[in-house]
Image 1: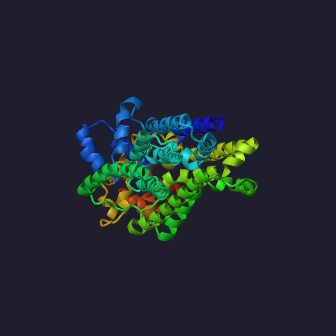
Image 2: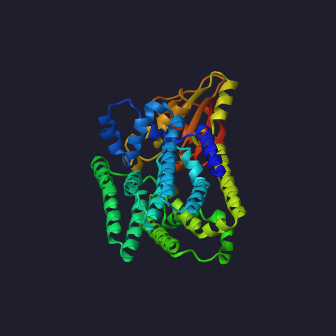
Image 3: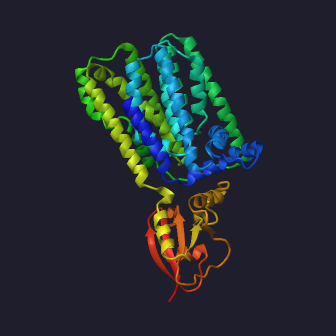
Length: 461
């Protein structure tokens, strides 16, 4: 319990301190109460490339949480509450308690767990609900099923993300196949009905979305990169504990029930990896976070393999807990030091403090793309960029705005650019001209990398 409590403390710290980025500002815009519910549903959620469930959930909590990105990250605590209820229910039904503890520690120690808990998107909830579904399916496997809770878990997991929905449906299908093969046809049919019921609102949401927009692939992920991402996500919960697998030859083979559930999970993971590889061939849009719900599958496989070890050796369990806390700490350190869109904020503030007349401009990176670039087809994308800039620096002037800017005086005009990786071939002067700066200018580069830039622009001497 100490390891889980430590992970929770790190999550709360990171929720407060982690930098924000474009997708979180998008979530905030989707859940604001500045329009009616009907306008939110049909004008925003139905045109988003994600099912409306997460937006509806966050929209419901927005008046309570205050409506900033950092406060809205607290919606993820609902996932932890759901996981606690699932664990208590499994405990009361006589579920494998050693597995529950070990599985929880391994999931909580994943860097994906800590980092995405501090992000206002649906990914953390997908990860947690996937873990809950595995616990529920283990109860089904043991003949202790809690069908209403399983149906609710499947419904929520399936409807959080179009690409993430694949994981929950495959997990349910893999267990249903096992039940059919072992003569438990009624339980198998119940699982298939639950899967169909969960997929129905997903299909409706997809139909509404396709009627409203033509989805645009915002990435171009090669088959090799997708395979690397699939492997990294699938093994992320296993690799930190690979040394512990050296003890397996000293452990007796797991009992039949545990061994058969191991086979179910392994087949499901293989099917998920194949499914995502094929999906990326069709969409070229697969990112590691789209598969985040697969992380608990690797953790559950490892927990089943190591369960007898931790029963026999409490020191081994203590070491696994300590390792989980260290991993969570490493993820927290990464989140605190990689500030995303807030990376250049200290430099902006120092420059403005040194010369009080400094004007801050922010470049909409869509202006760097050609007119025929498919990204222009993403609804409201320009507004999302502007919203993100203004959440961080409310007085930033968004460019280009149709006018020519002529720097004057001794204080610089700061040109702040995020997401400029689309055109890293442009030099500083070209970036300034696209933003609208004219006349004779002198540019001092304060920061520039593949993702962002900060330029100080002066009148030429």
